[in-house]
Structures are given as structure tokens and as C-alpha cells.
Image (cartoon, rainbow, N blue to C red; front, top):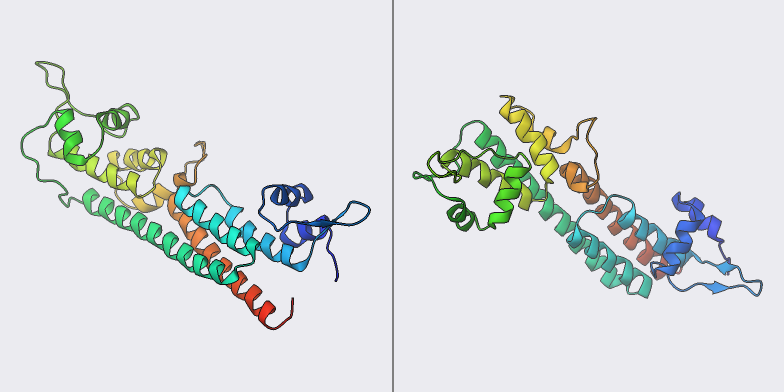
Length: 253
């Protein structure tokens, strides 16, 4: 059997050798034999598992559900259950596509609301507790959105309490849907600042495009691009697992 070195695997997928070692230590690759002199002896199977793992890890953290789905594919591949790995890979693709559909639907609602489509029929002004109950969120979340500049709620001059009318509740419904669809508060605020300036076009692109002066820490700061990339990677994972299965069934591994 022809063995591969740590540097061979690293070069094949474009990472530092220490990354390969970390993957071994974390169980993202099968156990590795060592030579009498102590060097790791990798095989083609290790390289195949590394290629799959890199598709899962080679990007920003995409959220718990997508991340855990990818981990399950790696675990099945490492264990040698390639049939399960392939099924999980197709489920992973469906999950990413579902997340993308939710993101697109939320952006679609935003665009309709921005151009005047009503999204709420509230007539009488409501207090914060009533709005929280109506929208199914906590009072703390509403206050957080207010503090972060996503909405400016007028106050009752007689008592100083916030008064949410149809305009504010419509805006909150859009914020809630965007947030639940995965967009970060930074992305939503970026879009709302543009909208409040009267610029209604390209809102979807604004949601997905951090400004040059922004600190971008999260995948959700550019969520549509993140999901587009993960969908492409999901297709690549399927192709990789199918390739591994084909090699094993033909004895060409």
C-alpha cells in the first residue's frame, strides 16, 4: 500500500499541515497508523475524508443546524458508512436550500413592504407588551431592536410609554421575518438605513453586502451569499461521496 504524508494531504486540499493534524486530533479523519519511526501513515481514504471535511469547514460558521448537518456527514464518512453519508449529504443539500428559500421569501416580503404593500392591519396603537404578544417575541427583543436603531417608536406624551401603530408594527413584522430567516441585525440595520433615506431599490443586495467600514464577523452579515456558497458546497459533497463509493465498488481506491 502506498502511504501519504501529512504534507501530501495538506498540499492536496490547500491547507497547512497543522490543519491536517488538528483534523486527526478532532476525529474528523479516521485513526492513523504510524510507521516504526513514528511518522503518520495516511491512505487514500484519509484524503477522501479530508476532502469532504474541508467542504464542511471551509467557510464561516453557517449556523447550528447547517453546521451539525455537515458534521454528521463527516462522521458517517469517517466510520465508513458511505451509504448513510450519501443520504445525509442529500438531506444537507435540502436543508441549505430550505434556508435559502426562507431567506428569499423574507427578502421578498421586505421588497413588497418597501413599495407600499400592507403587512399589518392594526388600527389602535398598542403598548409594548401587547406588541410582544402579537408578534410572538419578548419585550426584551423589542427593546433591543429599538436600542440598536432598527425602529424609532413614538411615545405617548402623557406617560412616556411607547405607542406602536400600524406603521411601527408593520416594520417590526418585516424585522422579525428577516431575523428568523437568518439575517443578522447588522444586515437588517444596514438595509433599513438605506430604506429610511428613501432608497427602495437593491434592498436585497444591501442586505447581503456589508459596507466597507463594517466589521463583518458573522455569516449572517451576508446571509444570501453564505447560503449560495453552502449550496454549491453541498453539491460538491454529494459528488465527493458518490466518487468515493464508485472507487470502492470498482476496487479503484
